[in-house]
Length: 262
Ligand code: IPE
Image (cartoon, rainbow, N blue to C red; front, side, top):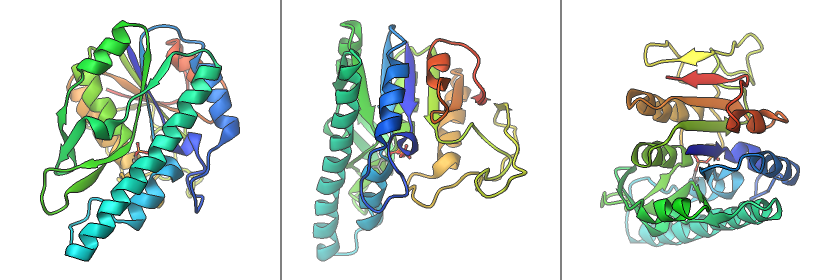
């Protein structure tokens, strides 16, 4: 079984000032995913469908009083609805390509504690997989057992790490809008070099490729999740979803330019 993360930055226009889908990319990515016909879970990011609301309502920050509580409560509803709409668009596109994609809303069965997954029953996902479906989950806004914050953001990257450990996963592929992990931010530093293999001993500047529009830690957040997975014995790969053919090559197990985390 493989787990494929489709980064919000590849599916949406992440820096837009309102939720905006990248139709061309979504269509192409869905076609590439359709080339794979074995067990797979897809987890997609939120892009502009999630980060704008999450930032506006400061979901995950300490609640400062009754007004702030009401505001964040509404913010949670709006964030969830927005990312669910993106999920609907993603699964509809996958259906067009004949992929039996079933959308599964993380906030209906996952509860965080201090911003990390605390409760998550994976039985239903297992059942869909066993029956030949492709479960499609996504970064969401969820309840949090920490009373000071009450709600927090659950990144797709954290969902991947959790599911990969629980569900006997062979490979994890994480696609984004850059080729992999660089020595510095490739969008601002032309001398930044791609690193082929990252382990827990690789020295990294934590600001490499950080994105202001991202409330879940940008590339630094992804590296943290994937190193945790590596410690558990599961190798993962970061690739660029914006380069045509990359997802198709990666899902079929062929070599793609990117970074392996092990
Ligand atoms: C973020 O999920 C979820 C919300 C902001 C609600 P991700 O962190 O997985 O999304 P991307 O891939 O960075 O857009």
